Length: 92
Image (cartoon, rainbow, N blue to C red; front, side):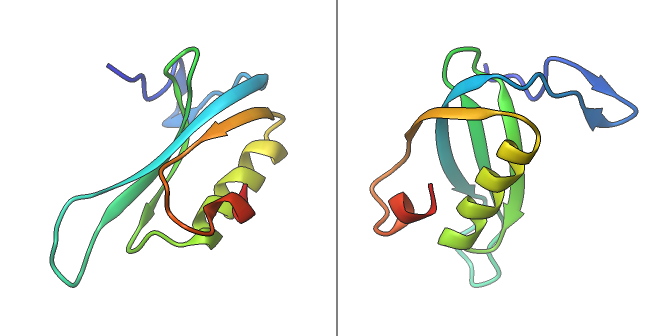
């Protein structure tokens, strides 16, 4: 079972910046027009969810935003695994 965080203090995730092999994916909770989903970036080795964002659709800008946030937190990205959605490789 994936861990949301190894450590949470005052409702804030405590990050442990390091080199990571990312697994990125979006999950949607409804097939209706007003979709709600979550985009998740997870460390493959530890299975820790590093960062996430609630989304309405799966767009390149959201992947790019989360990547930039991870880097600004001090993480280094060694590799990325994601589904076959066209254009995503440009974001990461």
